Image 1 (cartoon, helix red, strand yellow):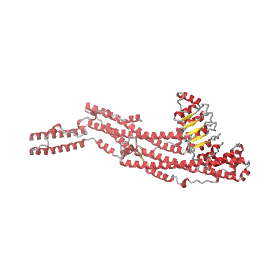
Image 2 (cartoon, chains in turn orange, green):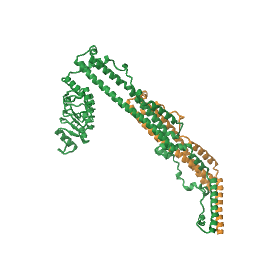
Image 3 (cartoon, one colour):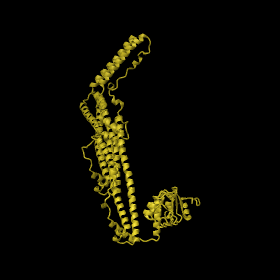
Image 4 (tube, chains in turn red, orange):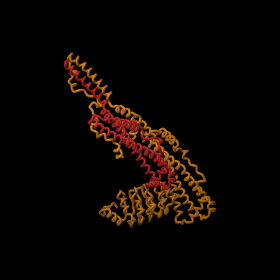
Length: 192
Length: 444
């Protein structure tokens, strides 16, 4: 029994030492850093995907609102025979709809900008991921590669994109002015 | 939208599991126990020797677990911790809140649910006030319509009086006290009718502003969870203010009619004198006026003798509670009189004296909610008039004088919708042939 116990204890201690050594060894190896970089890229990309999905969902709902408002403005325009912008402003429903459309269009513009940034971020991360995988393959084959510059770039990008994906999708008041009411009216009139 | 979403997807799913495990030691999960651990003696062993061995073994196992956990914590990738922090950041909570309002929502937090239910109540309050405003608007429109009809009724009466008394100048008209009283009444009704435009305008403006405030808040509610700087409290404040401001109270809807808004008595008199000159005296008008006076006092026994239906006569008949009206001597019906008559809540309307039915008269007549109309004096029914028959909700229509099937198609459509149509045999055969029925199978 004692022999068995000693044998098992030795075996367990062996496993522990193996695990510790493996960890310590991997910590210093470039392969380990590349794997960690891949993990970072993966989790950041998920954040960006989630954020993009949220932005796209909100964008979809706002587009529905914008279309409904535009349709109502056109309908009121026909009903009240409002030809000019000044005539249109005299009709409460059209004036308020234009104001609401201005609000929605302003948000849609901001969202489009954010979606564009998120798209760029997702593409950049895909490129970095490919580069990291390339470096890892070379490292596997040659056991030697200086990836420090790539890792620095990945860290920088990941940090930046994490900050970006944590920021609000919209800001009020927006940095850019929403379209003028008259411009919105003209676009609606031109479309029909 | 879908395409856009597809663009955003990073293709990490394409990475094989082996790609993410470059070295075994890199696995983020703690290493499992070696299979040999299964060889440990069962704790169920009952001998003291076994129990002595079991305790150190357990201690060893705990030690191994602790060391493994320590090693794993030391060696785990730093990004994992960052990811977990990020997942509880305010912006992530904000996404949850946005999702709660979005159709494809994750389960909302209790706070979000409270917020949204509070907003739902507020938006319902706005809807309720708008509903009240619309009810008031409908009531005012009805009153305004009554005033307008009343003005026309008084004008008709005044013109008749002017014709009868041969009054053809303003001076004479103003000297006649009966005419002067009628003129004053017309002016008063005009003032009230025009003054009613004020509360109507106020109601429209209030309703539109409330709708806008609701829409503006709804749009911001849609994006509030993913936006910075949106002041929902301000929306609440604005809505509360508007809800108070736009309650349709008596003082807010009060009208202030003034003589400035109505035409002067002279202007009204001049116009009516000119119109009365063009009027033709119809024999029996005096008798008609007598009958109308009786009808208006509630006695309908002589209503069947009416040869002409005045606006006043139509109003009094429409206000009666008779179930059947036999107006078979009426040969002409004005659209206005038809409109008023269509408000009568009875069941059977006989107008067999009408030889022609104008489309605008038909429009009002077939908007009547009663069950049975007899128009047996009609020789023809124009397509325009027939179109209104097709949409009538009544059950029975008699057109036994009809010989020209101009609008047979509309009549067939009305009959196909469940109406009982009575037409002469020749027309019945034609209709039955058109719908493919065997002759003799028809109801009539």
